[in-house]
Image (tube, rainbow, N blue to C red; front, top):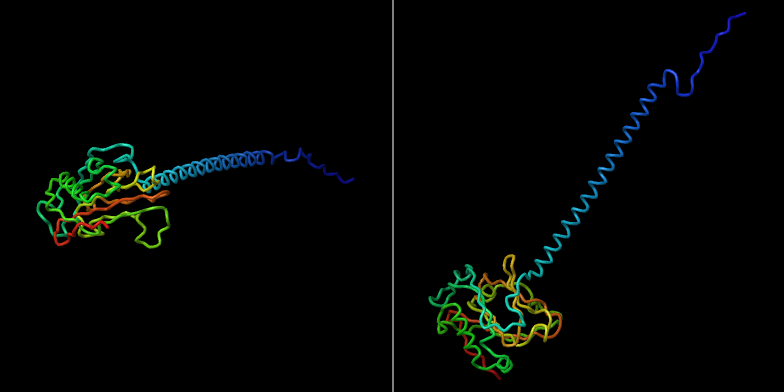
Length: 266
């Protein structure tokens, strides 16, 4: 009889000589899976942190933009206060250098002022004929010049502003501008307000656009705001949201060739 070959006994599935290497493979697979899980967790955390940082930066930029749009950090003259005199001296710009200088009149001292002591509310309502002379004298006093060296210049005008949609670019009064650049003859600008902020209209404040520290003037009937007309006093008017804002712009030049006579009240 032929000898029968006895089959080697089989160990359990996956056992025997191959068992060691297979268990090692499973350990490596488990370790790699754990490593991938930690990486994915880390990436999720970094992604979340990035999104949160981006949202924070976007919020900060939006806030900065809105702050810059509004730009109001200080009210120079509140509607509710009655100002005897308020004056701020600021460095003069170079705008005056490209125009003929008139000693004793062309601004060497620049700034802005607000007063409720020149014109009474009642006079503002009647628009007395001596209003221009009194404003002129107050400006001359503030800037240390002779009022006789100042001449009324054009345009000197009455403005009536409400929330009606602008029909031409000329009607878009809210854009920042410099009076000396827009009207070369201007050396000193003044505004006489004839209506009250928050009572007769909303919005419509006058804004001096200073670097990082804009200042506003809240109109009230009889209040006079005045300033040198160069780039040191870049300004704009807020849009009027409701009601009607009335004011008179009265401007002065040092050049007699650009002077005009007093407007005749009809």
